[in-house]
Length: 451
Picture 1: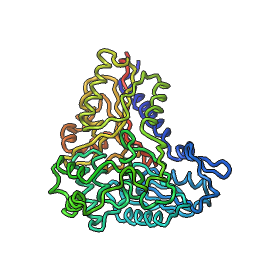
Picture 2: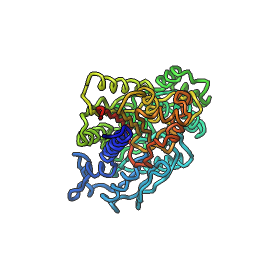
Picture 3: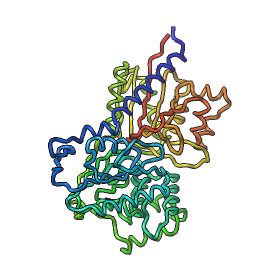
Picture 4: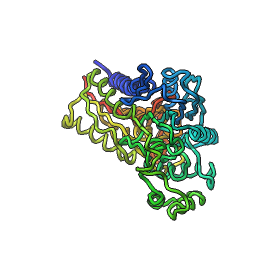
């Protein structure tokens, strides 16, 4: 006879194994190696060949949480063919590099290191000529790690703007639309600076739908958003009075034509630009699916494109779990539900946490009183919100264990303090920097009652 705690412990172990299988599938170095190779005098990126004998200089630039291992693999591939390189990464997300300079900088709120690095990147690609090749390495976090505000704006203006957007519940594409229009490097402006050199971007996607103009705020692709869109977003969340006045003025100046729009489709800057996605959320989910099936779970993938309020998304997932228990639909137990994407949190309290920890807490409240359910929600970058946790793990005993310790889950949820709730229970998911980033992975396990 197995005790209930033994069953839950085994399920938690399974959930972690499934999560880490997903992470391994989106290793940035492996992804670069999968898409890039040298044959004779030609560098192949995807199916596109570049004649190295005709290339005068190779410059490597980039930004994001996963760009250090990407850069390390590029160095392994090209060695001393690289003329010079600069990448910006989040603090702690590093690799040992030789020819490419690595600058650690702030994320999610940009800092002066990021600005200095972004300025150096623009200066480097501005000097690239028509016989040169610029390799741009992009991953999630690139928006915050490439802060280069217009001259009429300060870094402090940009920092406060990002904090406001993050706390109001704006979706990532809305945040990035505003980022692009207050930046001299995002929204296709890096491509403008690199032209007429050949530009190839290797991209690890961290956005729903893998939209190129949203990933890292699209520094190398045409921008589909406008200054008008920015004002609509500001009005939607009623944050005009919360934003720095110079930022609002800059956007209004853009609407009136006093500030140039971001480059659009048809701009010559994109004539020699090629963008290739080398890793995404669905790859992590499919690897997780393969692992869960090997562990004996009937597995269903809901979607890799889930957005919306974190607690609402948690309620939907919990409802599917309850349906499995009651009717065996859409799959019978033992079941594994997988989903990805990136939800949002509207910050109303003063606690500490992130969307994954908040998802786990909301789900824990929904599944209380049931049996044999485990919920894991984690960020593939190893960082959930402004915390050292990737996410959290909850189960059907979470609330009863919390009550014994005098913890009121409703109070923690209302105060956006999921981190301290799970910290007290020992159920934070701590991975450390993973050096990858393809949004979030959610795993819900359900098993039959064992007697």
